[in-house]
Length: 286
Length: 163
Image (tube, rainbow over all chains, first blue to last red; front, side, top):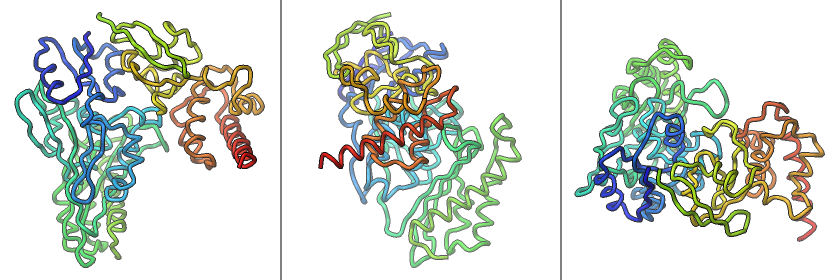
């Protein structure tokens, strides 16, 4: 296996494109190295993106943040301005693994690992985040919900690498929240995850996005759930409609973490609770 | 398997080693640098027995490649004591009997040191969350938490005296 650590994104894409065997991107490595050790993956080339300056930083502010693909969770948690404007995205990122894992793991890695239960993916979808994808010859920007196509698979081409995540301009009176259910208090994988991002105008929900994780092969953007609260002050009836829409969108599996019935029910409960937190963070009064 | 020549700094000393590209930093530290304080528990980032600092960030060395350590600053449990003088965490782990078999202890010490540098007065809950990435199958954690609390208190007293 070859190991390369290029210092710019184009070089990374070129290396990936030129490799005839299996070429993989190494960001934090908290998923990749485990799979390599288990013999599930045997790459011929690893392209370490942590030496690419552009991918190492968080830039921007109200007008939109750019989070580099190699920024570890711990740095996302320490970024005060990001946490103030996008607490839901940050809390989702901070839920991944232990402090040790936070020292390495990245949100782009969480996305590209393509687990249906990834914590940051629903939060990023609710936020309306986009990723900047760089290939050998061209760059493209794509919505987060278009990246994962199924468990373990993405829409990225072989020679493409994600350079950064872009969060949109933050409107005033906005808030987001991410909740996940796990049977323990720490170090576990989501049974259900729910993210809500909304903006208010004169105390009324003007726009909203609701996303769910771990209840379908990919994270879901649930438009019906958002529609249920747009134009309301999050009254009980609106919340009930949101919860019903969340449950209706579920297409989960039965496994050791939860049954289909249980996940479907909890998706509604978490969707409602996340909406209340996001509304409160936006300054809303019920 | 192609390999790499790695120049790094371990506990303040310049260290060089050669390793295959797919070797974990855990294996490089144990087998090439000779620092066996870092332990392998699970090898998958769940147990924290291999905890080290990499450029002052707490990480599992089993989830880092040896080659990735090139140009980095590494801190291991061997760097805690000052010669024969144990670090206050080590003293308190002994005093509070915060270890039995000892396999998890180096990882706990490194993780607790990082916690106390960042937060000199952690609550019990904060300690338990900060150490959630370190598993211990002997102690039931309580004595570990007490040892960290006692160290935090000692260190706060010390820094008060200084100032």
